[in-house]
Structures are given as structure tokens and as C-alpha cells.
Amino acid sequence: MNFARRSGLPGVDAENPITLTVTGRVSRAAVPDLCAELERALAGPRGAALTPGAAVDCDVGGMIRPDLTAVEAVARLGLVARRAGHTLRLRRVPPELRALLDLVGLADVVTLEEGPEEPVPGLY
Image (cartoon, rainbow, N blue to C red; front, side, top):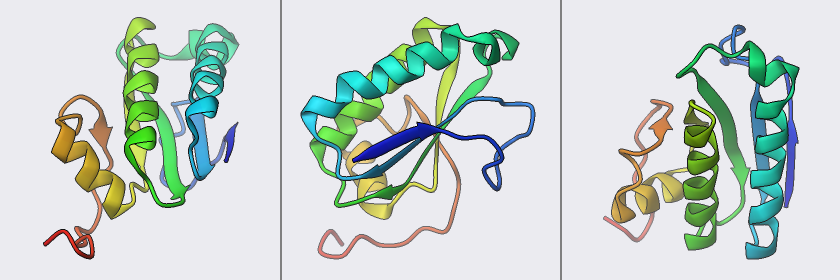
């Protein structure tokens, strides 16, 4: 599993200087590191530049086989963003993750980038 902050992500608002990118399979051991990375980003000069209530972007398009651990990561990242006075906006959300977030009720807690609705194989 990889994660990093990037700038210049296509489709991301240029006024939002913070983007967290999560790729690969998310393990339980990596969730605290993801949260710490977001906390560092929000505490730094780029985080101070965000207007209150602004969304922090999290690109999850590179996640492999999202499961409940990925849902836990999203929930905890959402809490980190909220504690800093911001919201978490997920970009490039895989259909499997979108379905899981909806199933556990987190689709209303984080902002999901609108995109083409694709059915999740085996769920419909």
C-alpha cells in the first residue's frame, strides 16, 4: 500500500493545496500512518492556507480490492479532517468502495466525487 501527498492532480481544485493519494491494498497497520500523514499535511503551511470548512482531497482510485479496512481508513481520515475543521472528499472512488461506504452509512459522512455509476459485480 502506498500513500503520498501530491499537487496538480487532474480534476482537483487548484485552491485546495492538500491531496492524499492512497494506492494498493490498505492494511490495518497502515491506517495510523495514513492519519498521521494527513495530520502533518493539515498542520503544515499548506493546511493553514485552506479556508475553514474546505475539503481535503483523497484520491482512492488506486486502491486494490477495497474492504472494511479501507472503510475504516476512510472513516478515520474523515475524523482527522473534521477535527481540523475540514471535510474529506474522496476522488476516483472504486465502485466496490462506494458500495461498502453506502452499506455502512459513511457515504453521507464523507464527500464522494460524483462519477459514472457502475454496478459492483456480484452485489446487484
